[in-house]
Image (cartoon, rainbow, N blue to C red; front, side, top):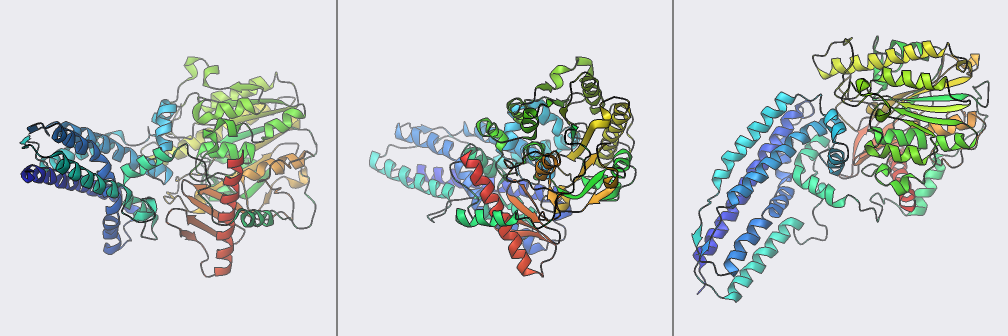
Length: 627
């Protein structure tokens, strides 16, 4: 006769197991909401309560995955007719899970603050492929506070483990049929919990979405489940996840976006073959500048250059991270939301670049970066796109490795300047700065203080700006200066200095683009170009000024053509945005909801911009699949 007492003990164990982890996830979610209180405090009680209610499905799914090992371990003992079923070992198992989940929780708080998305496969990839850079990225986070939160979470987790009975118990013999039946039934229930029921659609992030406030939706998504899902999906690119329309319709919509009006391109250069120095500035958001962000004194050099150069005032980064900004600026490739082309070297090598075009025109090409060029496959791109010289942290003496990322901007700019004095002309040289990156360190005094991240961020921006001033002052003494076009562009925007917490607002993507140098005709110096565009428009704008064909850069448009359309597309991990000269709309691809709309009354334009955003990401991803 089957011993139901033993099975009742097993059932009670798993009920308590689920209760333990539901309480842990409740605590984790509460901590997440508290850490993002600035975006939550205006929400009503019912909305906040909804976060905990709508999280249940994914919480249960994650617990079901966690329960697999205890489930198998207990039933293996029952099948092998062990009289004493040992469960004391599960205390160690639970403690290991507690520690792991607590670490994930604390890391997630910092990642969410910076990226606007929860911990995912991208973060794990950073941790393993570039651990030094990953540590540097989080170095500005308050270590003491994080350690205290971690210790508190582990202590609470330890208290919760007391819910479980860890005493071994006696199981009397039972028939194989009975044990098999219960094993299959219990296993089936566990599987349904993992899947999310018998419905057609299995669990996904959107199951937890319920609010028009992104932070509440993100809080409702189980952190560990989200990470596991992201890891399992990473590397899967067999189909387009942004399939909103049939491909013909999406492609037709994109072609219509790029249709230019009448007029002739303003030719602003006095030569067709200038030297070109492109400076991609880390986190140099428009908010730092006086002319674009109304911040005085942070970037006085850039502001003075803008007064004597050609400033494009309505430019937006294609994405929210450096890897996307580099490819956007140098190869005119739009960001692909949750996907990133730098992860796929075989595809990365196939896209065109400015350096390739200029190399074929006889330009000497070089790339300068004070950090590790292998980070995020930068080196793959550089080496496969006709850059003849690569200077990175390995090219500098150990004494110059003074920042957590590598060499400070002043050191790198000085090295490039010295090299250009020995380089044949014409040349195309790219510099990527890095000092204005977390942990926001400068080699000297902090102009705006260093009590908090805002002060440190302003100080590092001021430092980079001053380095550019010193660099240009020295460059003006060189023979090649008068025939050189200097281009300044940011890799992406930033949450600081104005505390723009929401990842989906267009201000987070607003960046400067400046042409500067004596090769600019005098009548164009000091002018602003107000056409709405993206950093991916740099390629076509520059190459056409040089009389070169930009046809391979299908996503890039000429910002100096009066009939060129006004628009910019941008994206983050699972969201897209589209902005023209009148309105901006951003959209959550998971929750299928509009997150930002600065003119909701105009429903017709809103609908058009949404269609443009969806068509754009669909067509861009489709091209990515075909590479």
